[in-house]
Image (tube, rainbow, N blue to C red; front, side):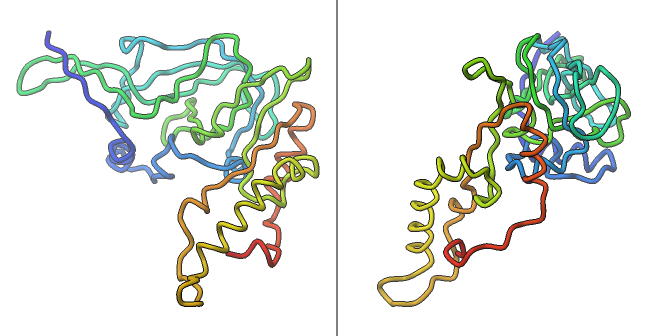
Length: 243
């Protein structure tokens, strides 16, 4: 049986959700996001990877989405937001399936340009999850940057690193650590919003400046408080923060 391979990106996954009659939420699984955005996830859990899928032949084909997915499992030790069973199934796009191509039975190996499969079994994660649209019992990562954060041991203390878009939502310690980057960002914003040759403001700020995030390493016992800061109402920008 012949085999063909195809790389599937954001547009194709979006199309699958549209074809299945589901609303598309930023193409479902692959967006980058800050912790402020990720905190809107339906579920936030502390979990351990219990089952992974590494071979294309391990994938399951979901006809409603017209695509193969790797169905991997995690065991939840604590729900930080929401509630549910002890074991969750998390889907990531990719794998192989059989299809008729020009009248010939063919093995199609579909690979996503953004691999969201989980790390090795036993890895401790903080996960931000939403239900897979229209598929009861299955979940998806909210984003690449804040879908599955590995818990790391720092001097014997379990921690994760969050990425804040709003400097003012950082902890006092993290604001001190990030102040040099914030100052550099403010200077760059000032240059990009003021045309020195004409002495007039520019209409647009560089798109790259809007994507800047500030890291904060958080102890697991302080994670609920950090997520609460991220989910709080937006802070009022100070004068020097304005673009």
